[in-house]
Image 1: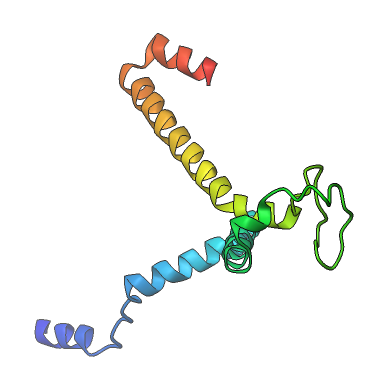
Image 2: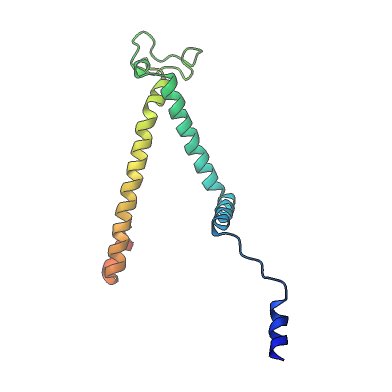
Length: 139
């Protein structure tokens, strides 16, 4: 009787194997990104900034960002797409030349913020009590 019972249990349909973890993780990541329009907007803005930096570095030189004393405060034109400033510098060229430094400053400031925040969180979690309250009230 037990042999018939065991045979009936094993001859049924085989269970479906779960998908590989990598496919499931990619699907979860895709769903997470799709549900967060602010993440998409941030990534698009970062990619546009990187594209502006790369194209600007290819098309301009630091020489183009030097002051031109004979063309101060010019409006936008074919030669200077965003015009010139009071010193006669081409505004588009100055922006293109300054973008790498701007990105570097942003990355550095973000990294410092994460490090300080992590240290404060560790201190607050380890000691707790009055120190935790003081850190939370300041931050």
